[in-house]
Amino acid sequence: MPDDTAHHRWLDPKLLGAVSKLEFKTRKIVEGTRLGRHRSPFHGISVEFAEHRPYVPGDDVRHVDWKIYAKRDRFFIKQYEEETNLAATLLLDVSSSMGYRSDAGGLSKLDYAKFMAAALAFLLIEQQDAVGLVAFDGGVVKSFPPKASTPHFRALCAALEEVRGGERTDLGAVLDRAAGEIDRRGLVVVLSDLVDEPGRVLAGLQRVAHRRHELVVLHVMDGDEIDFPFRGAVRFEDLEGDERFTCDARDLRAAYLAALEEHCARIRTGCRELGIDYMRMDTREPLDVALTGYLNLRARRPR
Image 1: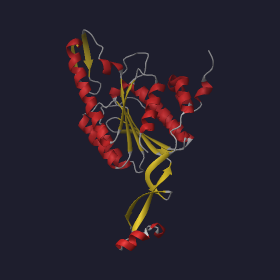
Image 2: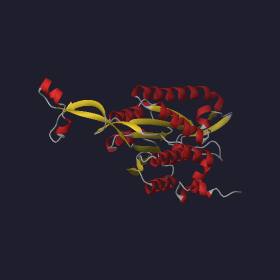
Image 3: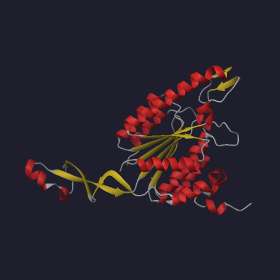
Image 4: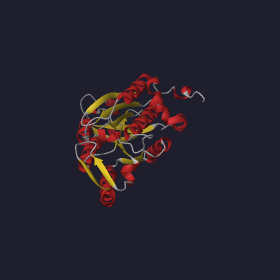
């Protein structure tokens, strides 16, 4: 077999055993795709006028709008949009339910989300955007502030390799914490199976969005969760609790699928109302297709 090691130099060598599953398709997308420059809603000294705000002591008087002062006898500062590098934070769910995989030879939800996080981090750092990582279950497991360097990317990869499935999800609480701790406005990408009450998830997302971050929710699901292909007597176990029960799967399937659709619809609708991009990912889908879908989602976002 040909030696493919050279094609994975963009990743930390410690990760090669896992991330080599991305193979050449994702590598080609990573090499051939760039998100492009971001027109930011953040204000700085640049070329395109955005809005006025009242003057406060310490503001540079060069940016006072004297025409407004002549009309209203009050000082206002001109604010501008700027072409700026992005600060992105990847919120990765590592709770126990993310460890589920329907195919023994396939990827778990957590593996799938890790690979997506690594690919997104590479894309962003390649265009000199800063990327941070918060891995969480019921609380924060690992945290890296956003930076834009190759050593930082390698540190993220090492962290992704090391992190394992943890405890019960508390996505609402983690989003609350993130809303207060992510200082620089930017992109926040949530990679999770969203096993939490939709109202809590949306309340947490709303608090992050209130800080004027751009949000993307990547809802990672296994094929078993989507299709419920079980037949006959099946023993089900709660991956985030102690509940276990055995039943005829045929009797449960219709109710389960209806509940799943209601759960996803509430989150999808809530995200749309909050101006948050939502995308469902199926772990049966090739990673290059999922990554292309994400990039298309970003490309359609109004600038």
